[in-house]
Length: 163
Image (tube, rainbow, N blue to C red; front, side):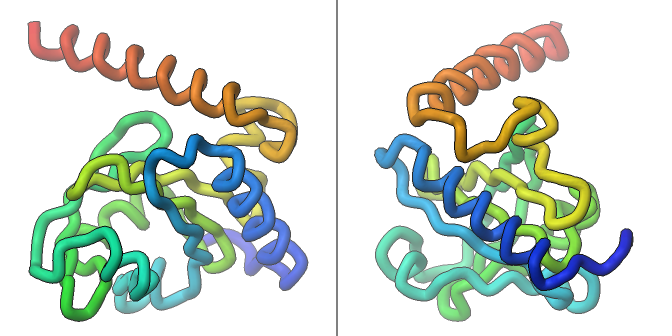
């Protein structure tokens, strides 16, 4: 764990995540989730927005794939009746060094797959670091082009690993 983010840093991360979400193609439902301590360090339970879950997810228990910006995948258990992620969420949170104050954009790209974009409260977001500019300056077309470039790259990497 790094230093504790200030209130202003938490608000800034949330605003950046909301801006990123607003600039994404709207053909997939999405939501922004600010991280608190129980999501990332103690019990590792991640409650999801109830309305989103009722509108877009199966009400049963199922395995969800959590895919990060690099295309790396983690499996997590989604519990429909409790509208949250349990087993496997801890692995994603720890592997991505998620901390209190970070904000995540969850985009449902398949019925059992979330693409997750991470905006760090302390140290800047991966989007800012990779783009070397504020994510609010990205146009929807640029976001879509970045995603398809990453997808092609990930497909190539997976083919190379298989051979």
